[in-house]
Length: 158
Ligand code: RP5
Image (cartoon, rainbow, N blue to C red; front, side, top):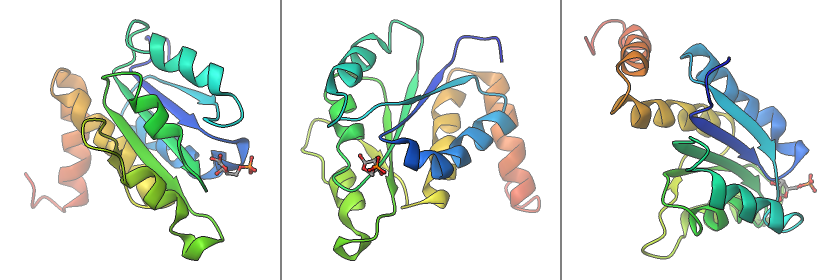
């Protein structure tokens, strides 16, 4: 895709890529230009800060951030930008598997992160939610996203 990316897909670790590929597939299917980067709120905090501060001026309109465990990436990004941030909790194996969900969903008032379901379904929905947001100002995305939803509903949504 040669257009400037409207969506940034971030993940806290290479180990998150399998799940976050689901977001990439959705955005590809809807023709939405995106970029993908690995950065960690804990391991590479300077990279996160630089990205968050520069995202809006570089043309990004929606940020999707997936992380597992003590999943601070979406919240730390949201603390440093007013762009919409969608958080994808990556399924872990400890803490009854609720660690990333609670870390992402329990943001303090005034710093919103839209939290989707844990795992691959959430990663897909992050892509669709980004499409819905972009649809407000982009008729092409709106038409393609609507086509998908109408088709999925067997025509009921038409
Ligand atoms: C989080 O810790 C990442 O988002 C990942 O889900 C989890 C484990 O990371 P690795 O130890 O596999 O790099 O920061």
